[in-house]
Each structure stands twice: as structure tokens, then as C-alpha cells.
Image 1 (cartoon, chains in turn brown, yellow, green, red):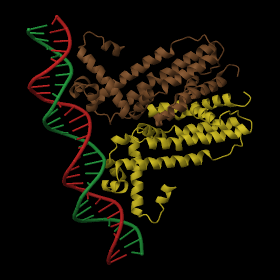
Image 2: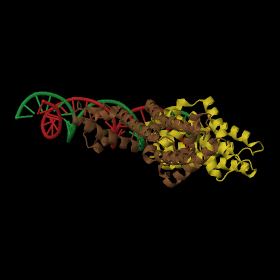
Image 3: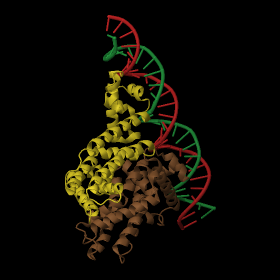
Image 4: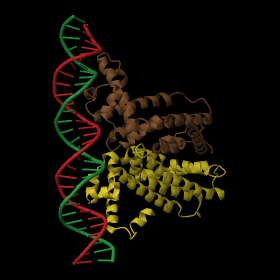
Length: 215
Length: 215
DNA sequence: GCACTTCTGCACTCACCAGTGCATAATGAC
DNA sequence: GTCATTATGCACTGGTGAGTGCAGAAGTGC
């Protein structure tokens, strides 16, 4: 919202808007690749095709640039989550729905880009605790809550037995992608779409065995 | 093994052995607290109560010091895992065993020290991929394999139905501590023994509902 | 076209830190 | 006690990177 309006707001000099975008894009790539400390403002400026001075004119310091980059990445991810998870209401059998959603969920999260973002924020949790916490609340935590709501539909229709919807949503999420995500954090090259999908399906089945009503 | 013998080997000058231990201890603390790049050899030397020159005499470079520190931490964790998980054979009812082990497992992993180690290795996975991979194989991976073996006992006794013991072990582990561990990586202050234990028990129950034979 | 703002390039300061060299002191082996 | 090895202190080099200053070029709004 705030981010989107910035690039359309007529009060903002288009040169500024353009520079901001170029810098934020390049900086995100660079921070994801090198981490905060190993990243250099000079390199970011070169990759953005912009003078180093422009970076400092627009963002003040390396710290503030990082905050801006992460703030934007968090907002983007949050929007994606809302668009994705809030989408359809369930008209289909639980099993189909759960299995399909499991694969989609794993495919959305166990991705080089998302894993790199998680790694970066985890790595900088000491230096920027507020950024790590905010990301956690607004992205993975929001996903869990959305999943919980989605599961509630099936609880109301009598397909699932959910004593604690939030706990169930966590169980779903970590059954489906916990192992793959954990592994990917240590070794990004471990990401394998086929294995990830298979694990997601296996996790979904375990979830259904545990939470299907009348088990 | 190699590490233990180094401090007892009579061929090693006791001054060297002593300095090595002091430096490795201080360096582990320092790296866990600051990360690799923000850590300084000067500070480590001071904390170890040793001259900077001694650090370089014994370890050659900051990189090699880091490798030594992590190698030792990995070995320590690995020994702990072997001692812990391989311990008792099961003579007790599945439910009791699974629940108790779940709590113990969560308590052992979701700990400031362990979480900090994971964060450090995840953060440096780009710079030292081999260290992150080795840790993952020798610690969490080894735990999963040990859990799988342990579960097999109950499969043989007919208490659990395990089509894939390794997958089941992963499901167990991430059901029990996935959420707490993930949260702790982003926010170390989120660690709460009471909540962790409760979540571990809830996860264990889900596991049992899904994997109990004849469900 | 004019007035204003932003961007650029480049040289510069300042601080920090990895790693070294060396002379001296301390310590272990016998 | 003697000799060899190791530890210490300290000054030093070299490199790197954050952040600044400024004068001129270029783009923007009207």
C-alpha cells in the first residue's frame, strides 16, 4: 500500500521513484546473496546502475537501506500470502483440498528466494531483531493463522476434528514442509521439487490421519 | 575422539593444549554472539586471556579458527546425540515412551545454545557450505535416523504402523518442535520452557493418532 | 527556455581489522 | 639449572568499506 503509492504518487519526483526502485531491487539481491555485513554499498550502487551518493541521498545509511529493503520484502510477501491463502472457499472434499494445498504451500515456501530471505533474517536477528520479529509475525505467522481459518471450514462441516485450530495449522505446516525447509536453510542446493512435493503429500496424509473426524 | 585425545596426548605441550582450549571456548562464545564477520580475533584473544599472536600461531587464520570451532561444536553435539538417543531400549507402552521422548527432544533442541548454533551455521552457509552441511548430517540428520530406529521397535511389536520409518521420524521431530524451533530462529526470546513442553506433548499426540497401528 | 531539484563522478577522510615481525619473558622437559 | 619451545606485548602494514563534499551534468515541471 505505502510502497505501491510511492511509485505512483505524482508529488514524488520520478527520478527519485526510479532510483529508489533500482536501488531497492539491487540491494535485495545483494543482501540475499551476501548477507548484511559482507554486502557493500558500492557494489549495490553499481548493480543498481546508480551513483553511491544517490544511495546515501535516498536512504541515509547502510542500516536504513537494509531496513527499507526488508520492509518492502516483508510487505511483498505479506501481500502474496493474503492473495494466495485467502483465495477460495472450500467446496471440495477435505482430502483433495488438503493434499493440493499442501503441495502448493510447500512449493511456495521451499524456494531459493524464500529460503534466502529466511536465512538473511535469521542471520541478522541479533543486529535487527525488530525486522526478524516483524517478518515472522507478518509472514509465516500470518500463513498459520490463515491456514487455521481454512481448516475451521472443515471442522464446521464435520470433516475434521480440531480441538485447537491454531495448533493444527502449525502441525499441518511443519508436517508438510518442516524437514525440507530446515534442510534448505543449511544447504540451499538440497531443494528438489520432486522430493518436496512427495514429502508434502506424505505430510498431508499424516495430518489427515490424525485430524480426520471420527478417527 | 580426535579432540579428546588432543588434550590428553602427552606429546602435546600442555601450554599448547591449554591455549587451544581457552581460545576455542572463547571463540565459540564470540562467534555465537556476533557471527563470523562481526567477530574480531582481537576480542576473542582478550576473552580467551591470550595474546592475539597465540591465536594466529595455533590456528593460522580467522577462517581456520572458525572451522576448528565449528568442528569441535559439531563433534560435541554428535556425541551428545549418540549418548542421548541410543540410550534405553523400549520396555514401556508406546504412548508413554513417545510423549516422554517428545518433551526430552524438544527440551534438548529448543535451547538458546542450540538455536544460536543453528543460526550461526545457517548464516554462514554461503561462506562455509561444508560446515553447515556437515553439521546438518551429523546432528539433526543423525537424530532423525536414531529416532527412526527407535520407532522401528514399536513397529515390530505391532504398536505403530510405519510404512516409512525415516519419514515418520521426520514427522515426529517437526510435529514436536518445528514451530518452536522456527520461531526461536527468528526470535531467541520466544523460547519458553512451558509452552515448548506443551507443544511437544500436543505434537506427540498427533503423531500417535496418525501412526498408531490399527487407526 | 527557465528555475529548481536530483544525479553523477571522484577524490577524500576515518575507522576498523586481519595478519605479521620481533624482542623479551615465561614455562615445560630432562 | 639448562635448553628448547611457547606465549606475550606492541608496533606495524595493508586493505577495505562506510560515509562525505563538491562542482558540474542532466532531468523535471511549467
